Amino acid sequence: MANKVAAPTEKVPRIQRVFINLLDTYSSGNIGKFLSNCVVGASLEEITEEEEEEDESKSAMQEPSSVKLKEGTFQIVGTLSKPENPRPTFAVETYSVSTGGE
Image (cartoon, helix red, strand yellow):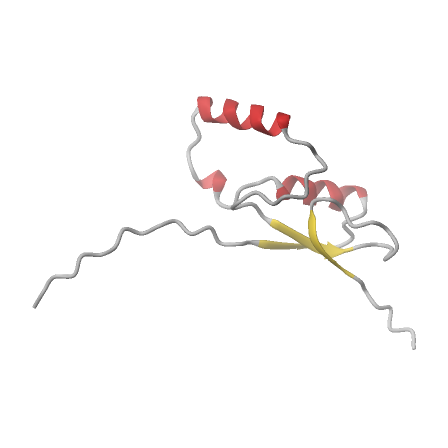
C-alpha cells in the first residue's frame, strides 16, 4: 500500500452575500458600505500594526465610487425603499419589493 501525501490546502475565498433591507436609507446604506469593504473572516486573524497602516493607506487611496469587488469581501445585496432610486455603488444586486396590491 502506498502512502498518499495530502495536497497542501489552499485558502479558497468563499463569497459571502449579505442581504440588507432598504439600502438607500441612511443607516442601511452606511452598514452596507462598511461591510462591502470588510474582508470575510479578517477579524479572526491577528493584524500587526504595520499591516494595519498599509491597509489604511490603501483604503485612503481608493475612490469611493469604484464598483470593482475586492477579493474576499462581502457582497451586498438588498432592497430599495423606492424602486426608482439609483442602486448604491457598493451593492452587487438590488431587488424590488412588490406590494401585492392587486
